Length: 201
Image (tube, one colour):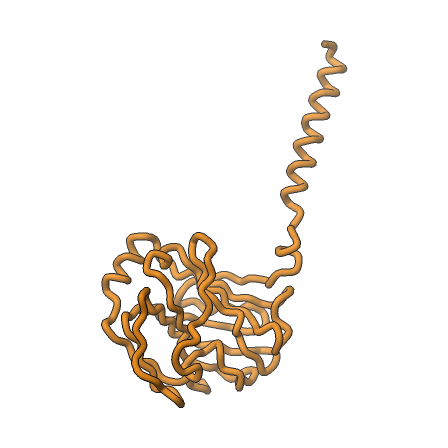
């Protein structure tokens, strides 16, 4: 094979590699039209560009009791209650954040629990106002073995506030590897009582 042919073959291989590389860089439809995510850790103020959120505490419990507007009896679960304490402030308009879920390492989604009094659920409150901080709990009910490697995704409600496509989303890394998650489950409170959402600085 002549030097000229070797050069042509090498050029073709490089061109093919470049095409494959460029194809991998092209975002798929979910990336092009999905939420715009901003990542952060527990204890960190996350500015998602439309709202800010700080998850200050992660607690687990076997039994959840509530002191909201219409509390029911304490709720038990076959799994574990994951209770996040957070402060959420909207920048644009009155809104809700029902597009909020805990995403396990395997991609399984667990949305905010609808059991109990929704007045205690920070992301389910529909009477929000921009610029006014709200403090409360985000509550999930999950199998204990789904806690390790999980993140919490907080998004705007698509039907109420134009969330969904290209909307802001905060992604909170709970920072739990297998060992830390196991320790947290082992130390879960026998019972935890939470109150309603609070407003103001």
